[in-house]
Length: 158
Image (cartoon, rainbow, N blue to C red):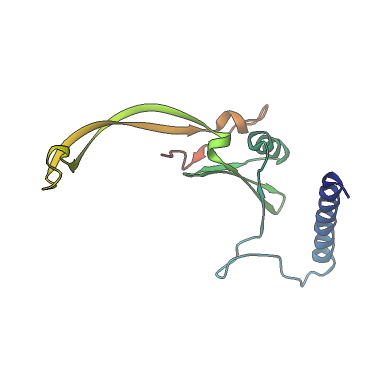
């Protein structure tokens, strides 16, 4: 069996499993909805981790998920959230792969560092240096024709 055949079979089995789960929940109203977390109701989310071409995969998911979507940018990841009716979808990609790093300004930072001339005594001197202030802009990737793009949550990363 080739890798493509194996992947196609795995995909088909996963889809069939989702249908079976939907049928089970529909046929038995007493079955508790799948959740995660030990405290309170946290609806089960389908998590997708982008792999090969993360920008393309994230954009494809963004187009496929209807309605309002959320974005969260952290130090390492870009997360796209949305709903398929009552099913939460979370798509995760490496921030550096899908977002553009843009320097939006600089600021001077003053700090104490060991004096390089007198390291044996380790005195401190005050120095001022320039530090880049950056944002990670992910907006064009997720906008759809006719859709208003959502604001970034936690968009500033260092």
